[in-house]
Amino acid sequence: MTNNLRLMVRMSAEERRESVIRAAITEFARTGYKGTSTEAIARRVGVSQPYLFRLFPTKEAIFLAAARRCLEETREVFAKAVEGAPPRGAQQAMAAAYDHLISEDPEKLQMQMQIYVAVASAEAAGDHEFGSAIRKAWLELWDGAHLALGGDAKETTRFLAKGTLINTLMSLGFPPDHRVWDGF
Amino acid sequence: MTNNLRLMVRMSAEERRESVIRAAITEFARTGYKGTSTEAIARRVGVSQPYLFRLFPTKEAIFLAAARRCLEETREVFAKAVEGAPPRGAQQAMAAAYDHLISEDPEKLQMQMQIYVAVASAEAAGDHEFGSAIRKAWLELWDGAHLALGGDAKETTRFLAKGTLINTLMSLGFPPDHRVWDGF
DNA sequence: ACCGGAAGTAAGTGACCAATAACTTACGCC
DNA sequence: GGCGTAAGTTATTGGTCACTTACTTCCGGT
Image (cartoon, rainbow over the protein chains, first blue to last red):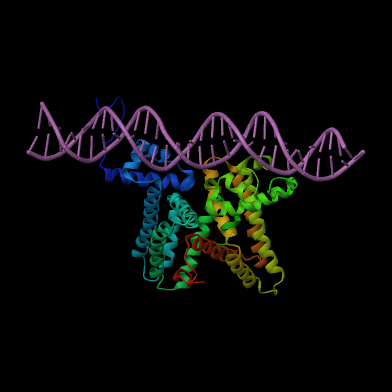
């Protein structure tokens, strides 16, 4: 028998790493770096906890991979939105893409918040490698928006500022009909 | 002798609670709720770790007290700034106050980030008490800005959005001369 | 058919940490 | 000046967690 009533799907290491990253984004988004146990990630993947450490050297490496993926995918969402938009409609297209993220993929926004505080902690602890990697990934997001908005730095700032406020209000759990959303 | 070469300043419980809150803001701001040990807070205060639990029932209670204080003080900073400003200059006065926070009190901004993700984690874990308390404190901040800006919700959103983007860029550790700051 | 390597597990280990218990020290007040 | 009470300590405990070691299971190529 394969294993007594146990549906174990064998995958290549590369495929498993992929599922670990997906699971890690979900878990880290909810409970943050320190608040997420590797056990929780492994359970979500459907694999034993020690096996994670054959796929990734450390918990930090898992977080970094998840963080990079998350920023990368967010950048792609905006890139795709702008791609299929009229020449002057980048602003609206990206705003719509953001709305879509809010309703369909809130964990991606939560994860961004977790990334920010994780970088701050790492920097405070003297680790600049991690922050450097994340800043690089985040810059690509910034540059993507900058380019789409015709190279207008003020406009880029305004767009990203709105985005970060949305992230904040979502984190705080204000319901969509609350008055703090009035200004949008 | 009081104690062999040990400078132990005896305080009232209320005074001690006060220093615990100050220390907690510093520590939680740097390393977050889960990443901060009560030992670290106690060391900064200069008391033994178990004594914290005579001043506060749980670690969570310490965090909540620190969070409330932090939001309250931020609100006061803006209120004071607006108070001594010309009738139409609330916007600039608050922006200047924010600049002052960035350079003089960055830990207060870091703490805000930590508060946001802590609320999200608590909500995800089914605890709505904590989030509710924080939302109330944050709303006072929002209302303060709203009032100062003449009841204009759009303007309030714009101001707070800029603030949260600043928090984010600071968390990520972008140096002040980096191009991501160009739009400010 | 079989064997080498890749996928995966079970059982620990040492470190850390929130909270408790039991005890000691100092100050204010009569 | 002693005594009750508030301020503080040391020692400990039960639990969690990242990571290691040593083992087992399965599949593909020859």
